[in-house]
View 1 (cartoon, helix red, strand yellow):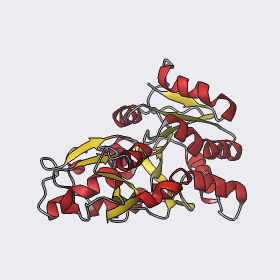
View 2 (cartoon, rainbow, N blue to C red):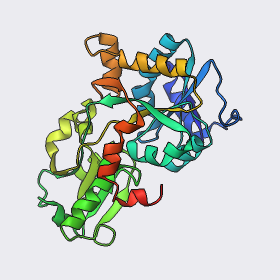
View 3 (cartoon, helix red, strand yellow):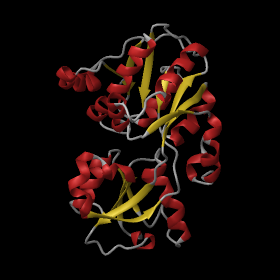
Length: 290
């Protein structure tokens, strides 16, 4: 089901109900754009509440600068999000690099990205006997999902390099949410967890950070790309790029927006900026079904 959010702390609870139960309204025909509305699709890699908290500020900022209504929208799962994106549902998107690889032929392109890059990693309890990747053989591992490089795919090649068959000798369970993975490891429901490591620096996890240990890291991963429809007019694209890249960490309002998105700055980017990452990981199973 599709979700439309308007940033308002006072009605957060109502919005969460709407996220699950609202009946979708008819959408405009594919390839059309309402000149006064930009539908901002956020990949459902976090809970509805967290999506509101993280991306409400940037949506409000874009509204002020562009003079257009920014409607945050998401879905309950990754496949539904990509299906709607392929149908032209979103005008502006923010999504992980790997799902964008699948979406790229459907009429979208990169216009900006956050910096700096980040890393995925495997965590275990501090008192765990697991010290290395090969010791995950026969273990239960919590992962984000099969769309996530930082939260799943990076580990597969590392396991294979150590003689472990990840599909037969490791029990992966896709949980979808970082907090579920972290607490699942701490509470001994899982032997290890896979996630983007900068999540451990978030305020919610500072107090429990010392309870986990990192046993391996991924290669460097570019931040989620900001993507637009190819049919979006050039002036709107330029205005979005200028607004995003003008967010300076030395300005309190801008700093809060950047912190909520877990980036230090946003820069203008293109598809070419992601090609080196795709080339580096092209042999992963994910690229078998673009």
